[in-house]
Length: 259
Ligand SMILES: [Zn+2]
Image 1: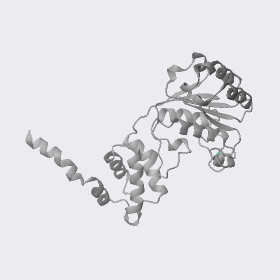
Image 2: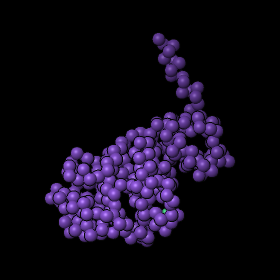
Image 3: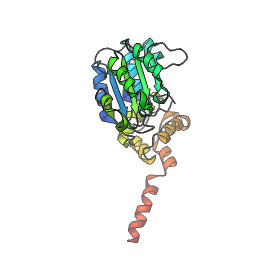
């Protein structure tokens, strides 16, 4: 799952996740019914944004300001603002662990913490948990009243007894399509920074010229803000950056002449 935000902030809402429409749809549906799973496993490749997604889920669960039927965390309540602030956390029931760091004592403590319904535990890189602790973790999961969100890159290394108790979300480190980038990211980015453009086709051109790679696209959005005249993205500016459309077509024309 590609997640990027040109402001350098991690996304805090489901709708800021780009691509992986099916996982997003399932999670938002559950979230809007107030029924995100009690134990879930986010499975996807390294760098796909699993922890970010886990935090969005946690934020939604902790949120006290969202109405029923609202999939996203409200973004305004005291918990929304503080869940992940390591200096001044306003939500005391949230904890993240790297699975490799967990000990038997930690699991014992977590087991009793998770009797609190508001408690949210995130276990990252679940496959790295010490094999001797698997049974104990299973007991934590069985006893939990709070929420457990686990992430993993290797779903097949996980105990069947645990797999039977989790809701699995599979997603890919997929390159988003140009349309997804425009609809899920560029339109909002440009609106937020007050840059006007000449329509969706122009934004599609940006996504395509930058090979649908989010990092350069996010940088581009920043540059436009700095360099564009009067906050308008013009075709001339795009020609300057990417070469005019005529130039792009030239190699094809040349090749056809040679045949
Ligand atoms: Zn909130």
